[in-house]
Amino acid sequence: MKTFKARGLLAVIILSAALVGCGAQDKPGNNPGSTVSPTTSPSPEPSPEPTPALKEQDAIIYLTDPELVETVEHPVKLTYEKDIDLVKAAIAELQKDADENKLSLWKRIEVKSVQLSDGLVTLDIHLPDEARLGAPGEMFVIKTLQQTLFQFDAVQSIELLVDGQKVETLMGHVELEYPMNKQ
Figure 1 (cartoon, rainbow, N blue to C red):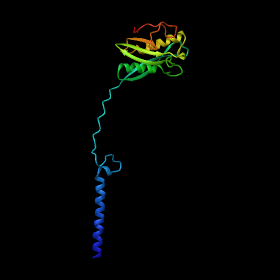
Figure 2: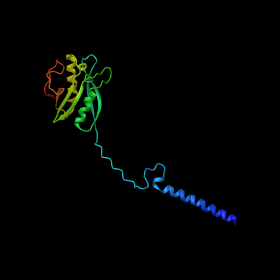
Figure 3: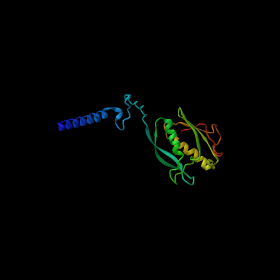
Figure 4: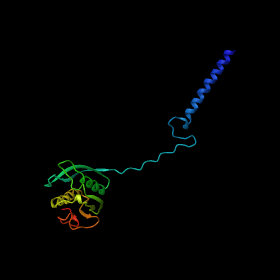
């Protein structure tokens, strides 16, 4: 009889342990790594807003050679959503050297704002003293800007402002047109 009671007690203990173990796994808050508390129900995740389709365009950024003798082409791929983003991306690339033989005269020029309205790009810049160049350099600063931006269909003219003002010359040598028109 003792054996029968011992076996019965052992069976009850094993069965109880199995039920407790199974019951703990079925409860949402008791699983390791579960983030749902027992008193709340899972809420649906908000659907992400659709991201606008980005466009890519091959473009040429015009830089200069180290001797300031000629402009040199630097092909890039620009990613943008709207035409203004394309213009801003091109100007950002215009401010970078490509390598030791393709130099940017725009890297020291601070771009304060860029706007595009009805084909007119209004570019407001600040010229620190270290960005000021002689006549050939000034000519290339203007030429590389025009060549870079006028390749885009959305750009028909450029108005270049210095600290928000129209100036006669950019650096004292080359007279500026207002606006500079695509030819």
